[in-house]
Image 1 (cartoon, rainbow, N blue to C red):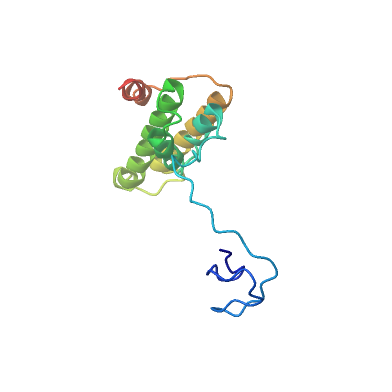
Image 2 (cartoon, rainbow, N blue to C red):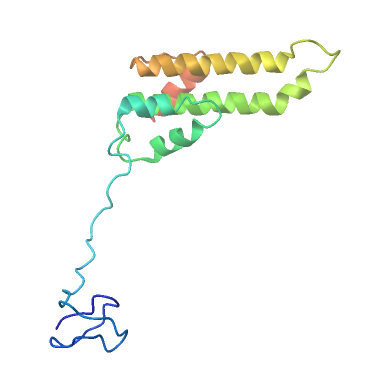
Amino acid sequence: MPFCTQCGREVTGTAAFCGNCGARQTTAAPAPGPIPSGPAPDPLAGLSPRAAAILCYIPTVGWIPAVIVLASRKFKNDHNVRFHAFQGLYLFAAWLLLKWVGPVIDVGPDRFVRFDHLLEGILLAVSIFMIIKASHEETYVLPIIGELAKRSATE
């Protein structure tokens, strides 16, 4: 039995108008097909490992792609991308810690350059350096957080 082209209700094959909504029926529309089942397509399918590694080092927001990369099935067995994701997360954690503790440790007379701002600049430079290294597909292990990232990526 055909269906209405407007509302989807069943109509008789010879009806010129739908009895439910009143829409003109030019041709009978086929029944709506079944909803395909199975796994949903991977939203990261088009993302290359190089791009994923680069995104993990974007200052202040790189933690978002890092968490997505670590949670994705696509990069579950890619040790290099997981290393960059963990190192990007730990670099963000260092920046976050500096934002919270920085104003507390920089007490004293007013200076032209505050110590915490200098450290933030260094962290920004390290992020840019790591973006360049990741774009050249090089694995550079940062001191302290790099070793921690290596251990986290292997677990």
